[in-house]
Image 1 (cartoon, protein in one colour):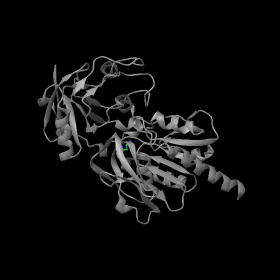
Image 2: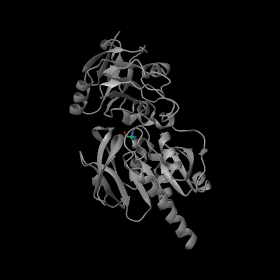
Image 3: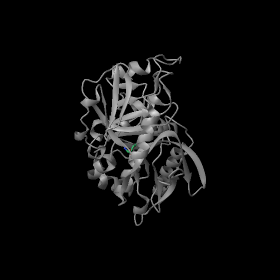
Image 4: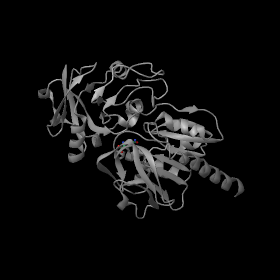
Length: 361
Ligand SMILES: NC(=O)CC[C@H](N)C(=O)O
C-alpha cells in the first residue's frame, strides 16, 4: 500500500508501507543518516527521539536485528524511511528482521522512497518537520511543533539511580538519553558507572563520591535543559568531566557559550575531525544538529580544539585550567569507527591525576 512523506514545505515523496500503517499522521523532524551499516544502533539511540530518519544507504535491513547492538532497551526513532528494505536477515546472529522489529514497536516504515531526492531537498532547504501519511491530503503540518520547542529528555532519561560493573574509578553518568555503548566503553577502561536521572541534584551526585562525571548524549535542543546548567557548572568546577554530544553542548552553555543549529546536521559514521593540538585527523561517528558556537567561546575559559573538517564547526573543546574532555562526536562509536576511543583512556588519566593531587596535596 502506498504511503507518503510530506515535508513542512509541502514537498511529497511516495513509498510503500512495510508492516505498520499509521492511523494518524506520524510527525517528526526529518533527518538523514549516511552510515552504510548501523541501523540497529540508530533505531535505539535515544538521541533520535522525535525524528523521522531517512537512511541514505540504498539497502537497509539485510543483516537483521541482533541481541548485541541495541543502544537502549527500546527504539526511539519516530519513523523510518528507506530506499530498499530487505525483508530477510542474512546474518547468523539475527533474531528478528528489520521490518518485524519496527512493526513490533509500532514504528512506521516507508520503503521504496527516492531517499536521494529527500536528502537533496533537506540539504538545500535545511532540516524540516515532516509527516508520514497514508494520503498527502491528511498532512497537518501547520500545527508542527519544532524540535526546539519539545522537551524530550524526560521521555528518555532513567528515573532511578543504578550502578553498573566494578572498577578502580567511579563515574557518575548524568543520563540525558545515554547510549549503552558509553557505559561499555567506560567499563572497558576500568570504571564503575552509576547512571543518574537528568535532574539529579549536586548534593546527591556528590554523595555518590564520584571520581569523575560523564554528561551524556541525548535528544533535542540543549536550551530545553537550561534549568540544569548551574548544577553542571558546579560539578565541572569540582570533578573531571567527560561530555559527549548533548553533554558537550550543555557544558558550553553552562560556561556562558551559545549553541546554534546546523542547516542539516551530521549523522553518519565517516565524519572527519581534526585535533588542532595534535594536528591529527580521525574519522568519527556523529549524530547531531546543534553545535557550540565558536564565536561565543571567548571569555568562557574554553577553546575549540577539535573541528569538523567538512564545515569547520566545533567538534570539541578544552578548558584552559579544568580537567575536562568535551566532544561533539561519539568516541564510543556504535555505529562507526572507534578511532577516538582513546578519549576514554584520557578521561581515566584525568581522574587519576586529580586523585593523585588530592592524595599528595
Ligand atoms: N547525539 C546527541 O547527543 C544529539 C545532541 C542534540 N540532540 C543534537 O541534535 O545536536
